[in-house]
Length: 456
Ligand SMILES: Cc1cc2nc3c(=O)[nH]c(=O)nc-3n(C[C@H](O)[C@H](O)[C@H](O)COP(=O)(O)OP(=O)(O)OC[C@H]3O[C@@H](n4cnc5c(N)ncnc54)[C@H](O)[C@@H]3O)c2cc1C
Image (cartoon, rainbow, N blue to C red; front, side, top):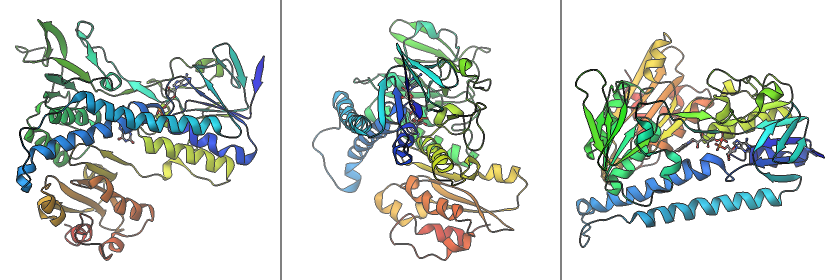
């Protein structure tokens, strides 16, 4: 027997539950299918648990620096990894159960637990159950990529998922990948007390940022004793006794890194391989991402793809924004487009990086005449008062139109401060609006207008 609905949502990640919550007001009944933890990567393995652990790492770091602030602790600082994990579990499990209760109690929502697979463009099987709907929203997210690297089979490697079960201190964590996930885990475990080496294949950390930002991030992590190996063109693994050996160059006399554990943080893959998309005729690109238009419709009418699985973004906020775009077009007659949004993300090392819009390199590559404003955090009173003056702020403006093209705030509060710039960009207002605004003292934000007044 087939159960009929008005809509099927596959995956209760960041986008699916919001979309489901919008349906009943339009008289639509939805089936919400989830195969694992409600809340997906964001809640179970990504943002929430990692930032909870980042907070524990920050507490350890600050405790070690306590004497600098005139605060004396008796004895040394040690970290109880079981308690770090327990705190993380408590935080994410509470959110997960809140989400599950909300969905299960929602009018017009039938929750079905299990793996969904398309049988046709309007039919989906979940185990022995078959459901059908004229509208299907795919929100299946992604998983850690495990690239083919020599010797990987002989080492027990970790990914961002299995890291969530770690309740012990790795003696020496080798992190493969010097981007968001690798940097966050690397700094976190260094602060917990592990030796950490980050191996990056490219010539610099977080390679899509400007070179000055990559260099500053390198200095921040190295200042805490993290070793960074760049240009690791050919990575291979082996075992030597209890140790894991990571070979980082396969040509010359292979320099190697010896550690106790390996974390692979080399990107993500969409969960589209086991969804039966071929039965529905939904097209994917060569990396497996579902192809969508500017309103997130697939090539098959009545099927949309939202969140990480469409390759249009790789963040929780891009997934949620996808859901808002679909709901606006479908339910509110409000024509919203993916191309309306401005790139924005955070990198949650300490101090964090908040990024909005283009990098300076991108702006110059586009042939723009630009003005650039910079201010080191050593010249931001609030950062100095807090004893957290690493990093800098940077803003890039179109010299002709006065539009803000992009900004990066690598410094204390950078993940929050960036929004004052982002919102002015959305308002399409010239930079002079923010330059003339009176900001509160003492804050990091108060120096944004000053920086704009000193652009070159
Ligand atoms: C370690 C780490 C840290 C991160 N930190 C941040 C951060 O600080 N900020 C940020 O913005 N982003 C962060 N991200 C990225 C963020 O987690 C993802 O971009 C976000 O979760 C994507 O949401 P989504 O809704 O597309 O998919 P997901 O959250 O991945 O949800 C997809 C859901 O679909 C389910 N599913 C998959 N296939 C099926 C199927 N066939 N049938 C039924 N259910 C299915 C899955 O079980 C899952 O619950 C981080 C990611 C990682 C890995």
